[in-house]
Image (cartoon, rainbow, N blue to C red; front, side):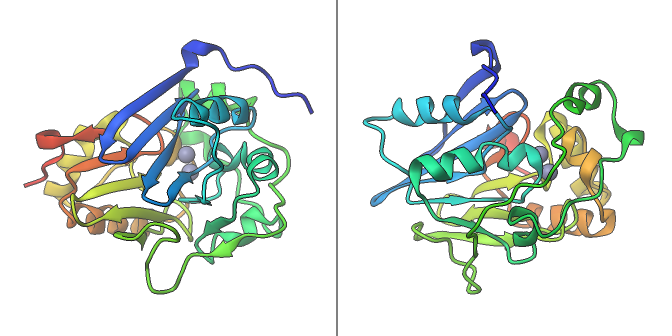
Length: 247
Ligand SMILES: [Zn+2]
Ligand SMILES: [Zn+2]
C-alpha cells in the first residue's frame, strides 16, 4: 500500500524537551528520539503513513543512522502505525512490555475504541483506524530489571490501565518522563487537579482507548509521585520546568 503524504503543517518538531530528548508530532501523535553516547533510540512509531516523515526528521539530526532500538510505550495503532516500515528500513530491534507483545505480533487485537468518549477527533481518527492488527515477527520484552536497552540511566515503569502492558520511560537524573498515553497534556490542568483530588482524568485518544480506568488512575498517581520535571506525552505538548511541578 502506498503511503499517503502527510501535509507539512501536520509535522511539527519538538526540540529541547530535555537533554538528549527531542520529539516529532505527526498528525496528532508524538514520537521521540532519546540520544545517548552510543547512538539514539526511537520511542513509538506514530500513525500508518508517518514513516517518511520520521525518517526525514531522523536524518535532520545528522547523516541517517538507524536507531539502536525502537521502544514502544504500547501498541495502539497510533503508536505502531509506521513500525513495520521503519523496522524494514532500519533493522532495529523492537522492545515492548511482555503483556503488550501479542498485540504487536498479531496474536491479539485490542477492543474497538469507546465512541461514547469520542468527540471531533474521534471522527477524524475513524478513517485511520486499521482493520487488522500489526503483525511483526520479532519483538523483545523489556528487561525484567526495569532498565532500558541502550539507555543507561533510564528505566521503564509499568503503567497499566490504558492498556495492560502500557509503560512509561523515566530518567531519574533530571526527572524526565515520557508518559505515552498514561495521560495527555492537552488537558494538563486536569492532570494537576487530578493529583490533588486523587481523581485523574484522561482526554483525547488516551480516553477513547482506555480499558481499565482504576488501573489508569493508579498509574497516573505513580507517575505524579516521581515529581517529573520534563514530561513528554504521546499526544499533546511536552512540558518542562515549573509548569510540571506538582507540589
Ligand atoms: Zn493508546
Ligand atoms: Zn495514543
